[in-house]
Image 1 (tube, rainbow, N blue to C red):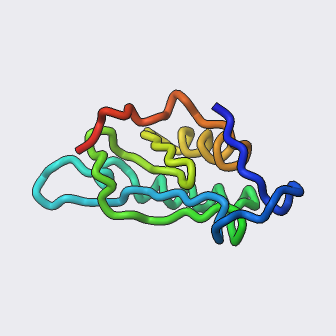
Image 2 (image 1 turned 120 degrees about the horizontal axis):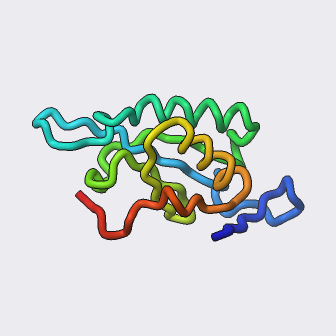
Length: 123
């Protein structure tokens, strides 16, 4: 699936919001022993994504913002991240998955189908 989001840099209309895309990483940690994204390397993945977005020149107003989030209530699929405004949910395993999301989705507007979080997986 290809997503098209116009931006001023490609001659399109100005984005409706301050950022073209927002990436939210669940970094929730549960102290009661229940599964949580923080137990699966979410902080390292967040740090890696933020660095890759910056290195690719994608960060800043009108572009991409990578944010920390608390519980996104999709623990059964964790670790997870979600890209808005498209509301595309990803489950990832390692830095290679994050690299693919940055390059394919954030840079080229192409959803990474193999990493999509199954819609039925919630808490």
